[in-house]
Image 1 (spheres, rainbow, N blue to C red):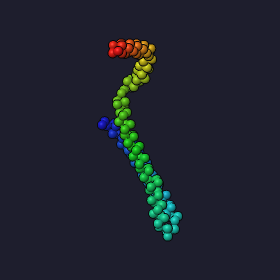
Image 2: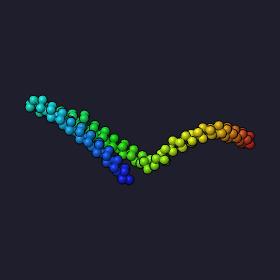
Image 3: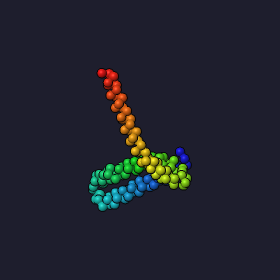
Image 4: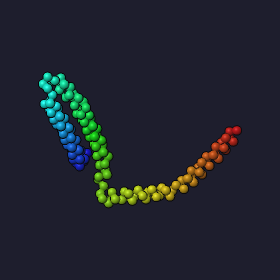
Length: 134
């Protein structure tokens, strides 16, 4: 793996980890504020609220970040060869594509003619084989 790939992956990893820490910190802050607002006799409600926060906010966030990390890592690996091209090579790609598309569109009538001729030859061969068998 190239150094630029590792650098990009480490930047993405730091960003995703910062988002996870931010989510965890804000969720903890919500839990602390809720604890201050609840009566001291409602300890079981505090634990239940912490469990709901964990199940509904923290765990899905970690799962989504993990999925995003996998997708970003895969995208970096797929885009790495494209990043190795210089400006001239990258700018010639659309022109090359247009040339290929125009040549293919010009070849369509010829390909259709070949298709008709081969189809006709196959039908003639089939009738000759059937006649020979009969």
